[in-house]
Image 1 (cartoon, protein in one colour):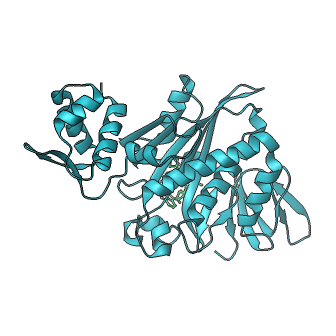
Image 2 (image 1 turned 60 degrees about the vertical axis):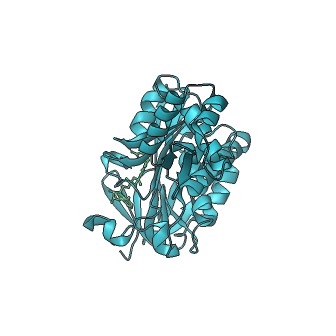
Image 3 (image 1 turned 90 degrees about the vertical axis):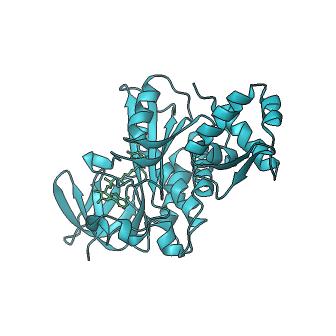
Length: 327
Ligand code: BT5
């Protein structure tokens, strides 16, 4: 069984040591044998670190730091979100794994993160393209003391948190599209998938899945989304440090989640509206197989989308997909 705590400690000592750190010093600091240190070094190499070993001088950290659980954890500024963090190089879906863990009692704030997903999930059985090496895919287990009909507010919490975190790294202001898309310059840069385990009266847990296209470039997107998807890098014109962005994202989720628990949906919705980019615009919404067209009147106090149809009737939409009507 690997001891992630000891591996994180080795990385901390190697970073603090600037030059080489002897195997003896590491084994003393950790209270383990030098063979155990060597095994940890091998495991760390597998998780992306370049560690130079010299028989006379010891170990030295070289090259760029990888995107992994140790690095994200070392940057965390949260109280509980991500304090239990599981990082996988490859997973089917972080949401699916988080759901299983939540059912088995994982603590609130547990985060599952992956370098790549082979079966990344969108809403309604759709797919989330999740190639390894460029983006952020994470799922957060939350246990809000609310009834199931309130759980959709956590999509709003996630959207506000993601927009806020992305805006720190991106020259263009992110725009939210109801209910769960984060757009940059009109293209989708991030998506949210909320799943929950509940009984009629109360939510047991919510899995808040967030996927952010960070460093993907246009040719990397599959043909079918090349004209509708983008990444933070595409807008910024430079690589973005995924470790820092992931850390900011988790801080932001924690902050807005706490606001929601303390003050309810009002402050969340008011922040969400600051990023909503479609009020007053012609839109088209597909909801349960029906298409509704009209002028977007915004979102009401329950989070439902309001549309004024050409005849003047106002329709309230509780679930669906919206697009700008010009598309
Ligand atoms: C979403 O669904 O936008 C929810 C995406 C949630 C992904 C995260 S990643 C971590 C966690 N684990 C998971 O398994 N999922 C969550 P939806 O609104 O249904 O949008 C899906 C549609 O977006 C697809 O049908 C494509 O058209 C498009 N799409 C797929 N991959 C994309 C990508 N990487 N970037 C932009 N658009 C994409």
